[in-house]
Length: 104
Image (cartoon, rainbow, N blue to C red; front, side, top):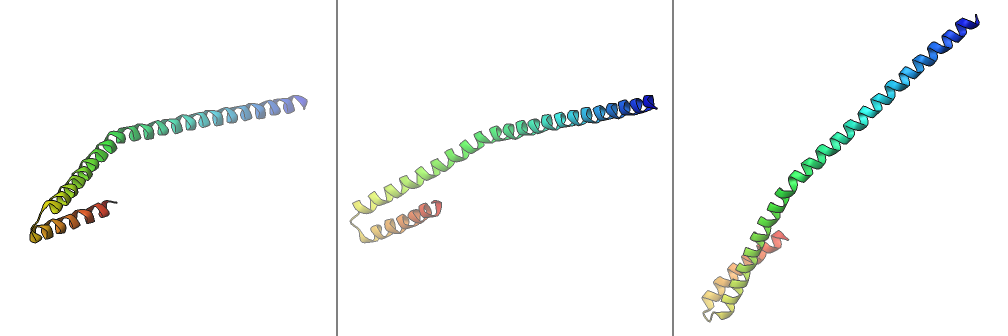
């Protein structure tokens, strides 16, 4: 009787150890998968940085071109003596200023 109880206890302990070992291996694999997913996301993020820099560079070029155009129109308006030319410059200047507000 005692031998069967000991054998049954040993079998239960062995099954318990196997279940725990399998859970530990499963959790280890989940952790490795999670780190792999993080690495993939970081790689994608690093791949997007040059595109972001390029977009910012293009925006800065557009913005500087707009600011130069506004400055040139303002100078031309100040230097002109003809009322019709001043009106044309001011109209164009107003459109450029609206585009700056739209960007902001």
